[in-house]
Length: 395
Image (cartoon, rainbow, N blue to C red; front, top):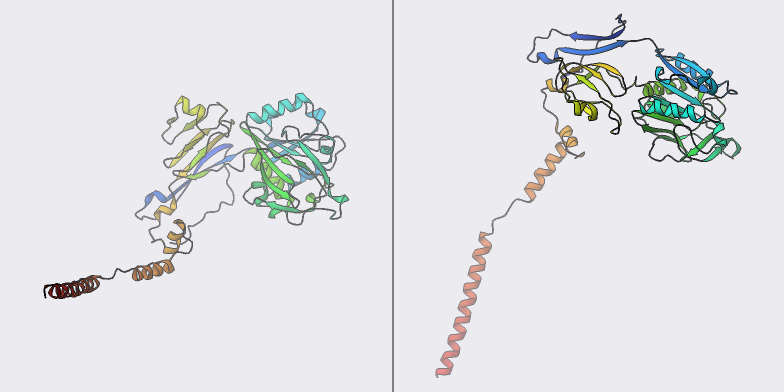
């Protein structure tokens, strides 16, 4: 069975909102269930991002806005504001909020951001040199252990040492190869996920879940002063993928396979109700499940409508797993890997045959007969010796 065929749409002119789509082939084979592929697409206006910066920082907003505008698909529009201008803004209308190199954040402003995150929003904090004048990171909450100015050391700069290639911000950024970091703050990660570290093990990119949202911390800056990241082409996919991930756009999928699980909420502490409508138009979740279930299994093919705990609305097409139509015999090597025996395959079969041959049981019948014969001879000799002694005594 060869690779499945692919379909490419040069353009898809659909109305605003979700559109249910279907691709069908006329194969007339014995497996009609895999002749149809369901998926959903959503047409929306670009989502809005709020970039909050320090008054004296004129570089970060320019680099950030240019990176998002240079992406293959302009999925965001960026509103820029200083801390004083951003205070009191309705954060709920933004897909994400970026805090860049802020010296201080008013308590009321931080409180509003925390509420925004708890209900499903995302905040991206870039520390910058202003963090050297503070003891904690706003919103993220990590304690600043020390500021590290690598430009004043013998190495002059550091590079990325460890990076998790599965993390969205790193996946398409080539592990930030060649980027020079002149400044970073060392933060106590606590229970945060560390996605990247510098060569001296300083955490560079950390993510912390809060309620239904999350906070991402970049312990350097976006200004081309704390590093030369904005001058590298990989800065564009880094910013784009991070923005998509934080806004939830990255994790959205218009198609899934039967029996896959869908995440309904990101925190067990929240009791926000969710809604699932199956292909028959029924609501399979009880009231208790709707307010507590973490995931939902997509048990059949068709379109599902979803209202998630963070307020996001989705339509997802669910299809039968195409691999179930492949009736080819699985090779022994593949089966061995599944069983946890990477050295399997024909070699293991041959080795098993040799072992079986080596451990073939041997008959011990002859050994038993020889032992019985030896016992009889020994008994006869002893008897003769006893009789000889008796005759001597009688005489």
